[in-house]
Image (cartoon, rainbow, N blue to C red; front, side, top):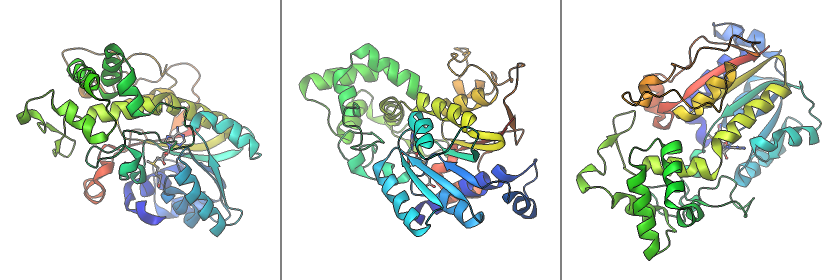
Length: 347
Ligand SMILES: C[S@@+](CC[C@H](N)C(=O)[O-])C[C@H]1O[C@@H](n2cnc3c(N)ncnc32)[C@H](O)[C@@H]1O
């Protein structure tokens, strides 16, 4: 269960910020605030790292531990057996959480704190059979729900069934992929010969559309070479799991179920997710298209549409600026390199 405890950035920041009353985060300050927070919702239980940290830090706490992944739910059940009456495992999606909380007897306004650590877990990314990985071959699946919702389309269903234009939209919207048309054409040409069913088969099809010298020409945030299919994999994963709509549903549920003064901590890992969190907390339209200047890369423009709405504010930011990991935290956990943490108090 403790395998993801290396995510020190997530723990230290989430917990400190969640509990600090103002911009300070000294330990004495945190412990004096702990008594105020007794009922938590960990919206993204994963391998339980955040829930464990909460259990360790807060006496008499109750944690509702949600995850859509049956494997994570199983881990939450095991943890709940070890911490009788303190951990309540909940299997389902963000969009189902309101009903699920009510079934557990939690009413609107009944939560003190909500944590959301968006995206996939290391457990999912590192298991080839889950089909998220470009570096380890497996069935092209990518469903976080695993076998829970067999009717939901897998990534293989998407790449083999959708027409070229739909694939272009997915790759450009969710992967911000400049070469979406080229990649979609390569996928359509390849699947006419043979269905695309494996992760590395898709990686090879996408790679085939580029010259060998450009396969690793892109760099990630740590300036490490990134495979040319990386953005396409991100796009498919977001589409298959409807991640951005789910994130919006999670934030809306948090607003209903937190009590006034309750805290929300949201960790995001790419600009599309962070934009949803930022706009929601600032009272702006989450669905509005970004104002893009075609001459400037998207990353440069981030933050420009960030001015909070002047209407009735529903959230107050705990920190003025979004929190990002320190260099040593990234060294310890390179996957956290793009993490952004926002914490807010429900008014
Ligand atoms: C980054 S991991 C969380 C890791 C966790 N904080 C830990 O310490 O182990 C994200 C988890 O959220 C779950 N998840 C993602 N989207 C979800 C959704 N829409 N509804 C419910 N769970 C979701 C994933 O299945 C995954 O297990």
